[in-house]
Image 1 (tube, rainbow, N blue to C red):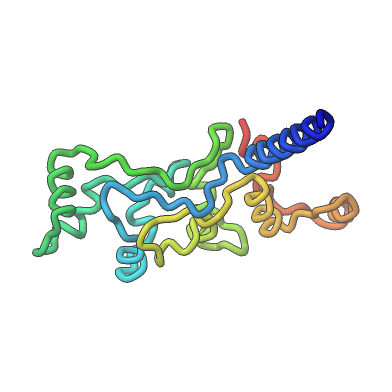
Image 2 (image 1 turned 90 degrees about the horizontal axis):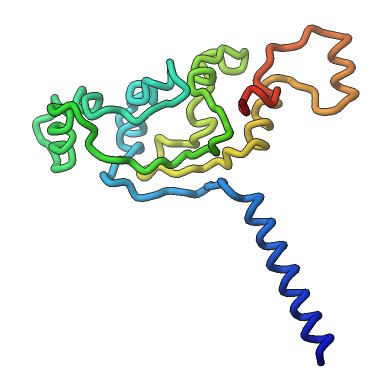
Length: 199
């Protein structure tokens, strides 16, 4: 009887350790995360139906590592012209007049603290396949169809590297690397060096 209890305990311990290790490898992955926000804001209505470009509201993405949440005054550039206002828009109007933030939005796309990501490097990229910059949807998904913003991609190191390899023509094995080194001029680096994102 005692060996059976030890065996069962050992099996349970192995399962718990395996589950813990699996969870550790998924830590920080929030694919599917779509928190409720303090004010219902529909990107489907604004970016989809009304065709407002991402960079109109998230103008910081051109010059900063952060895209940023638009200030209330940016919202009022359009909503200030409308006759009919909702209660939520009236709150934005008041916040804009007082020059203060209205709400504390819940961040959806989170990266670990040890990762450096620069929106402007991607938005202003002039790679041959992205002459107008990397589309926001490449990382954020089809935001223009979302009534509530959701993280649709993994945003893991592997996910980023896959994109950088696909769009840089970077060789994936030693033989390809050697052939490229001696046969043609290398393409511009697209951040495959560890220090590009971790410093």
